[in-house]
Image (cartoon, rainbow, N blue to C red; front, side):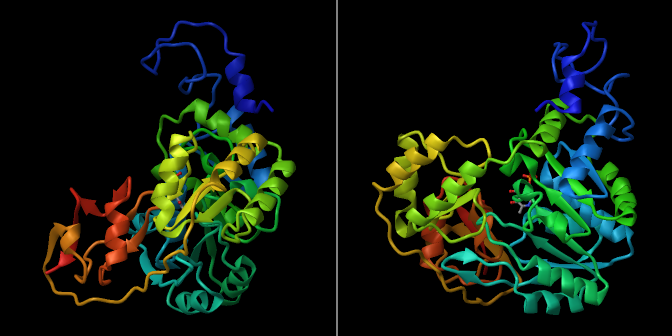
Length: 404
Ligand SMILES: Cc1ncc(COP(=O)(O)O)c(C=O)c1O
């Protein structure tokens, strides 16, 4: 379905481009012209798109973003700071944009340590949230996470209401849930929808929304601090259309049935099929890639297959056929023990790091969650998972930072 922005783009008259962008080509990639509105103070086509998006997402106001959910998380935290809050509680496995947003906004982080189950990080429990919220002015949850786990949002909202503190949700992986009881917009004062991940928007397309007038005004000021002043029209048009994209119920049902047949991780998010391979995860990934099938991530234990309403039914059939040919073994749920910290740190080869205390979180990218955290003893399993990874974070030229 064509949105307001695409209709405007398609209706452009031929003209000489004495304006940016420098490629000077006719098409959707234009700048803010007299007829194309201005995202910093929208009153035309972009305002109409934001109103429609806000209605669909259940917001008082929504703001289009062309800088990813990262920009939305930063703006959300800055709005929180502007409201008078000085601290926020969030899980240790939150996306790095949360920690960075706190640094940028001058908010104190109250970090909730979470547990893993079958090698998968779990959302904080209500008890953990409640304890964290006693020490913080707000709670920020990720919902759903990369593995399709949901925190108890209803319980979280009740705790926040009782404490008189706001609930913020990083819904970078949950925009396809709008209109359902699982969507962040049902519970949060401010939330982010990462439209480019689970809905068909172009990469970096996202939305940040507020539930009430008060939070909308704070958010309106905050987005201006973090958004680019040259927003991409192709991305904005794709965000509007992605939010308006029809649900694909046939695919949703097929994905749920496939998960059961595959004995996949039992999450409640149909777009995330998380298949346990244990030690065979690298073998499985290589085999699938040779067959032309690429997953979203391989965390060394699980392969995650990301769906959207645009996924073709026949792709699911192919995936099932190829997966059924692959061996699997039990997943690792590595024990994490604290190590000894000294003041000084050094970079050492991974092969020499077993038993040392990690000085900088390191893991596979994506999902960008640490296999070993700062302060933890480095195990043989985490070294192996890092050595065999395609992409990593926290390492430097194959070396890991440890306490001396
Ligand atoms: C939970 C979560 N939040 C935020 C982000 C940032 O999203 P983006 O890459 O759109 O900036 C990610 C990225 O993977 C994420 O997983």
